[in-house]
Length: 108
Image (tube, rainbow, N blue to C red; front, side, top):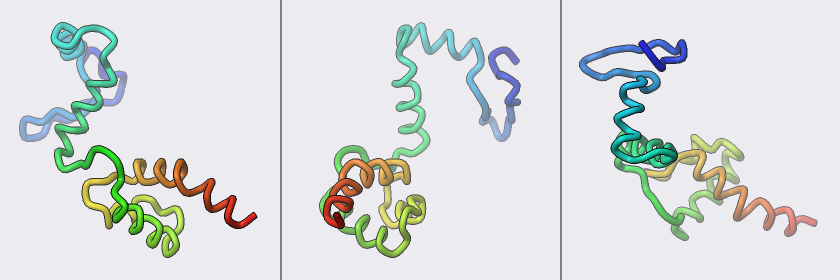
């Protein structure tokens, strides 16, 4: 299959898993225009996980992150399980941009 880059394609109950084909790429470019691949990834994630929360982390979620980080450290996927709709990478990035510097400054 063109465009599969050696990953293989699995067809199961009408779902095809793997990278997009050349034909799918052409259709996407016709519909969305060239150079819009970031939006393709965003649309795919939203389609696959419609329950994902978007936007800022709330003060309640921040409190949970702090409490769970004390308990579990940098186990971001474990912490994410306690925050429905949030993914581990988002929590990790939030931690690194908001808390890491504050904690270092506090213990100096």
